[in-house]
Length: 94
Image (tube, rainbow, N blue to C red):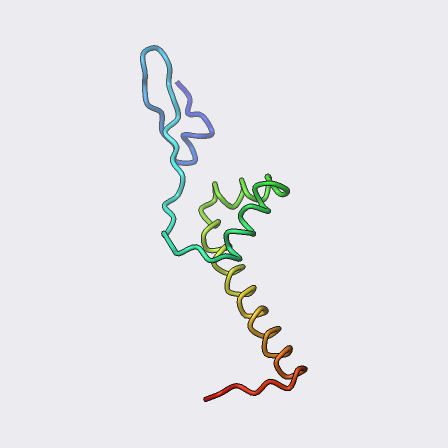
């Protein structure tokens, strides 16, 4: 029998009763802590950008993407707080 495209790309099948089921698994993803901005962006992706969420999830890049979003948002938040302090004339105690 000729190989399918799936088999040519390195995939394999598992026989279950009379059917051949493709053996597929999601790539391993590194567990990381969830920040508030990461969690909010994840909810946004799930609700309004389902295709983007699915693509990131199935490619194994979702966690790295969310960690980067959380880092960027936290930096912006801290910069905004500093700008507000300066605008109000608040001095930080050392």
